[in-house]
Structure formats: structure tokens, C-alpha cells
Length: 121
Image 1: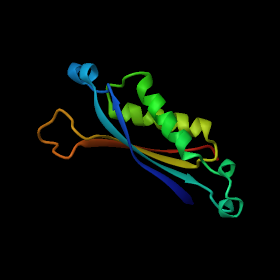
Image 2: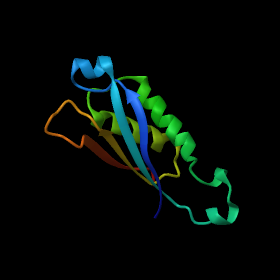
Image 3: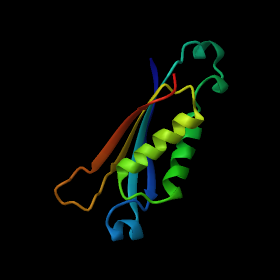
Image 4: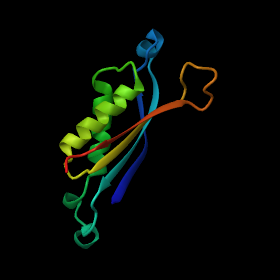
């Protein structure tokens, strides 16, 4: 299967378990991998024949801003569910939500959660 990767969409939102995370906000990075059939796209060279990743980026920002989540796992799930719903040509999606600066001194390179979901056959 072919793949489109969108790496490190940068957002500033208010997700987190701790009250200060939800009040002050913080940076999040979201990476998405979409498995789609791209066979024939090179012949048409038409954006209508593929997944418009600018639309995906806009959707991710809107989902993230909608309602704060306590867990980054929940945010990843919401993103994957909505993209699969609106883009039925996506056969498989992998969403990774990264919290680069969590309130943990031990996690010096951030924390992340990844979900993998499958579209309808």
C-alpha cells in the first residue's frame, strides 16, 4: 500500500491531566501516516484524485482546538476517527501525538502516544 506522511504538525493547545497544563497550554506535535492507493495519481496529477494533506492539517488543528483532552491517547483517537470518516479512501491511519515538554523531569525528550486504525474495506 502507498503512504502519505505528514510530519510534526505544530500546535499550541490545552490538553493534559494537570490543571496547569489545561490552563497555560503547551506545544504538541502531531504526525500522521495515511495508507492509500496512489496508483494512477501520477498520470492525472490532480489533487482531487488523492488525499489533500492541507485539508488534513486543517482538520487536525480544528480537532485539537475543539475540546481539551486529558490524555494524548484520546486526542490521537479523535483525530484518527475523524480523518477515517471524512476520507474513506484512507485504508489505514497512524497518528502520533507528541508532547515535547511534559511536566516530567525524567522524560527529557518528551512523551508520545500512537494509535493505528483501519478504514472501511
